[in-house]
Amino acid sequence: MGTRVSRRSALAVAALLGSTGAGVVGARNLLTGQAVKAREVIPKSWDVPPRADGVYTRGGGPVQRWQRNVPFDIHLMIFGDSTATGYGCKTADEVPGVLLARGLAEQSGKRIRLSTKAIVGATSKGLSGQVDAMFVAGPPPDATVIMIGANDITALNGIAASSRRLGDAVKRLRASGAEVVVGTCPDFGIITAIPQPLRWVTRTMGLRLARAQAAAVRSAGGLPVPLADLLTPEFLQAPDVLFSEDQFHPSAAGYSLAANQLLPALCYSLGEWSGELPWESRSAENRSLATRLRMLARLWPRRTTGVPAPVVVTAG
Figure 1: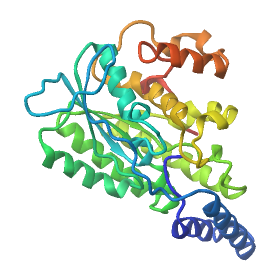
Figure 2 (figure 1 turned 120 degrees about the vertical axis):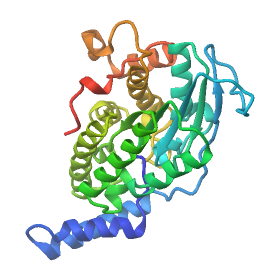
Figure 3 (figure 1 turned 180 degrees about the vertical axis):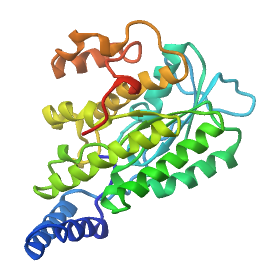
Figure 4 (figure 1 turned 90 degrees about the vertical axis):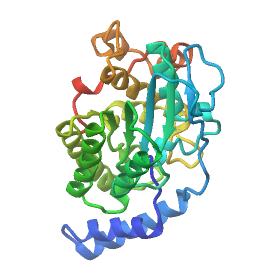
């Protein structure tokens, strides 16, 4: 979810993990073989996701192309990897950045300018370049959302180094005056296209990274949203609905579910959250997935069933 398994990275994961425990040769051969099979099932990310940067207002309607004379109240910028770009979406209105911009416009009643710096295939190593591009493009935004981490697992970038790079990016954004919300590494355990035990190994690494990311984001002044905790039960229950055709990236419904968790934290960080706090409603926890998806389609973006990051437990 949110990355691609290339020949080099998949084999590297298998080789490294297979050499760290008992039965070095057997484990390495098993994981290497499984990585090859996973590579055959999960396609590489070549398509360009839909883009709909511009200005959004309450009440819906088409996006207004932003030019220097077009007014806006809040500038929202999206950083990260393929999940941040909405890879796998068919239309721009399905992209998480657009969902967040529309949701924030509905919640605040303000004009929201959306800009996207996220890149398909990006890892934490690329965040500094995305932030650099932000400064080159113009004044810093008012709020940012980052979705990153899965590619760091398949690229073997290291948990400590990856979380540190994310923390550094959050520090730079906060120093510029922007609010920062981060969706941490997703749960590889929901990707059935990755066979066991390779799936278990990558899941373990991903959850460790998510915990380290959450700590780094908090220390840097941002708000982490534990997507693994919040999305895994739904993805396990309805993979045919929430995964796209490649069995790896989310579908439009999956991206809606993710955006529905990020939106409360984004509104909270900007002081735009009001009314009943979602985590205080016990009834929301007891709704079936089908009921929650119907509510999402009917009520989005007027209210959500997400959990703002400051009060939830980190992944793991």
